[in-house]
Each structure stands twice: as C-alpha cells, then as structure tokens.
Length: 342
Ligand SMILES: NC(=O)c1ccc[n+]([C@@H]2O[C@H](COP(=O)([O-])OP(=O)(O)OC[C@H]3O[C@@H](n4cnc5c(N)ncnc54)[C@H](O)[C@@H]3O)[C@@H](O)[C@H]2O)c1
Image (cartoon, rainbow, N blue to C red; front, top):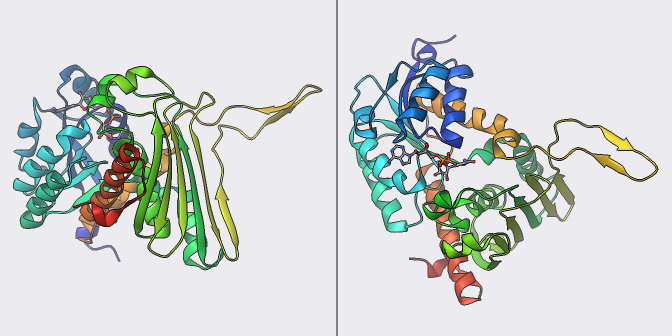
C-alpha cells in the first residue's frame, strides 16, 4: 500500500541551465512524477527564462541566494559551473535544503571537506551526479562482478573519449581533465573494483594547443592499482572524431564482461568496398540519457522515502583524491600512492 508520504511531490529548485542543467530540468518536468521544478536560476537570465518557458517552470530567480531563500523549495539541483559547487552546497545546506550536485564537488579537498561538514551539521541529504552508476551497461558489468560470473576480478579497462572538447571558457573553470572528465572513470573504477591504492598517469596536449595554454591536458592514459590487487586502465581523449567512445571491460579468473558503444540503429551497409555502419551516439546527452533520468529519480526517491542518497558526499570526494594523485603522477612522472594525498 502506498502511504501518504510515498505519494507526495518534492518541490525542487535548479541552478545552471547549460548542457546538463537543461537536461535535468527536462527530466524533472517530463519524467519524474514525484517531483516538480518550481524555480530555476542562471547568471544568464535569458537562458533561464527560455528554459523556464520551455518546461513550464513558474519562477525564475535572479540569483541562487533568492532560490535557496524560498521556503517552499525542499531541495536544489546544482548544475552550474564547477567552481560554484562548494559555495552553493554550503548556502543550500545552511537553508536546510537537500542537495543534488553535479560532479565534481571541487578539485580542492579542503574545500570539499568544508562543504561536507556543513552538510553534515545541517542534517540534509547530498547526492553527487555520478550518472554512470545508473547506466544499464555499467550496472550489468557490476552484476557480472558481484555475482561471481567473471570470478576474481583481475583487470578493468575503461575507454572513455569525448567527440569534441568543450569551450575553453568551460575548461578554465572545470578543474582540468582529471577532475572534469576522468572523474567519471575514477568513480566507475571504484564502483566496479573498489578502493584504488595507486595511480600512474601519462598525459599530454595532442588535440588543441589552446587547452594546453589554459593549463590543462586533453589526452591521458592512466593505470590504477586496486586494494584487492587488481589492475585497471583508463584512456581519455577530448576528441574522438567518430563520436562518443565509451567501451568498458571487466576481466577475471572465470571470464570477461564487456560493453560496446551505443548506436542510433543496428544497420550495417555491405558493399564490394566495405562493411560499414553509422557512427555511435554523438555525446553524453544522447548516450547516457537513461542514466540521467534514473539518477534524478533515485534522488527524489531518497527524499520521499527518507533513505540515504545512493551516491554520497564521500563518494564525491573519493575520485577527487584519485584525480589529485593522477595530477601529481603526471607532473612528476611517477606512480603515486593515494596515501600520499592529504
Ligand atoms: N554528470 C555529467 O555527465 C555531466 C555532464 C556535463 C556537465 N557536468 C557538470 O555540470 C556542471 C555544468 O556543466 P555544463 O556542461 O552544463 O556547463 P555549461 O557551461 O553548459 O553550463 C553551466 C551553466 O551554469 C551557469 N552559471 C555559471 N555560474 C553561475 C552562477 N554563479 N550562478 C548561476 N548560474 C551560473 C552558466 O551561465 C551556464 O548556463 C559542471 O560542473 C560539469 O562538470 C556533468
């Protein structure tokens, strides 16, 4: 039987209506029966007005402070630029709002710890947007490990390449490749194989010198050692000309489980020259649509059912520690133990 509390509607406010914020606004407006998007805000007020009109959101706040001061809002969805996450988490928690925040929390661990301690004191829920945990392929890989199908895990292989780099303005406030992009792969690594103990990263600027001029890298190969003795590898590029390349494999004593790229159709065209197919789905918005809907659904459910969020603040912190180690490894050209990161 459904209790009254199970059937209530959660009133949400959202900040940042860029690539991911617009998608989350759409998910809340069109997919989630138990949530209502009552207000949104963005420093780009025109975009905010436009997204509000598109998804029937009744209120556009002039700034985040106005949004969190609204007593009718129970929780906020933070989708603004990475360098706003910590101040917005702190303000939301101080106003007693539950929080869904996009990855990463920040690149700086003391900033993250400050935010997590305010959240804990306020007694609000915080979930971090590691959507890949909600992807059907990654969940099936996890099942192959947890059920013993592949036996004792030996190796993890994550190929994760974007079709094109984001704008330089985005890169500058993103925290850099390891914190912005590889952070998903670090999270998936933890999700599938458990704690990481050592990282070795080779990286470079091979796609666009402007990314190097902004102080970042655009290409990386990273090896991981796990506490359970297993070994992993991550490959990243900011530009795969054929589209979003997301291929994963877990390998163990009894076999392997692998996932392939996703396509808009399954047609192969065979001629006397070649056997060809269309390119993979272009980018994250297309490839991971289902996972974004599932993660926000899980956030709303943890509020309605008053259960812990499925991806916690500590789950948000852990891959940042791995990213810190990767950055040191790249700069100093040596393997780095996670125990070195304070
Ligand atoms: N989980 C994922 O797969 C995923 C995918 C993309 C982005 N992200 C994360 O989401 C965040 C946003 O990324 P994006 O790609 O949507 O970026 P974006 O640049 O497309 O959008 C960011 C939006 O935030 C707004 N903004 C910036 N500062 C603000 C402030 N102080 N107050 C209000 N609005 C502000 C900008 O005007 C812009 O509309 C980043 O932290 C990024 O790491 C996560």
